[in-house]
Image (cartoon, rainbow, N blue to C red; front, side):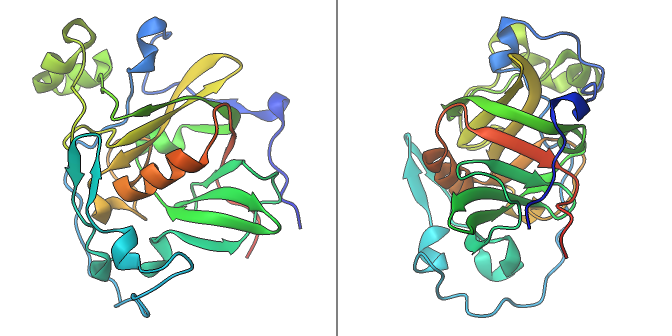
Length: 242
């Protein structure tokens, strides 16, 4: 059964932490960042960690050499298997190529067509819950810079060195946007909503103190390569299925 999502007239566009209107600098400006460590709770050991529809999970989440950086392997044996990348029956009813973020379940779906979807586990922060509706991936960036907004800098003065006047934080393994970022626009306006990478694998499937929608770096690289420019995206709190 197809899931009904809000139409353009029903979209919610909430303010992002009181940010002011965004100009040209918005291409790197983002509220997406982690500001507190994530407590790790050991899940039940996942079963059949040796393989998946793509081959070995150990290979999928092994170290990646990309853009001059070595992305560390993810300790998949310490993760809940449901948050690992996998092909599932499509629960969204959306057209192929559509990204659907279900914030209630911490899942991101890329609709493949023929009743299937690629499912990724995601971590969510406060900003990850502050926007919902339909929009598009306006553009994508490999190893993006990150520029904290003024409101974040006022709370964390140590971030001032990464402000707009200083050109933001350079790309790298410690950058809060990780290996890739997908920038979400609605009606030509930057929503400040991002899908991005993160080295904090233990935040996947959880809601943390700050940030938008984070994927493991290996997963955001995979998603980036599968998603064309201007791809439609739906962000919703629940898909209405069991």
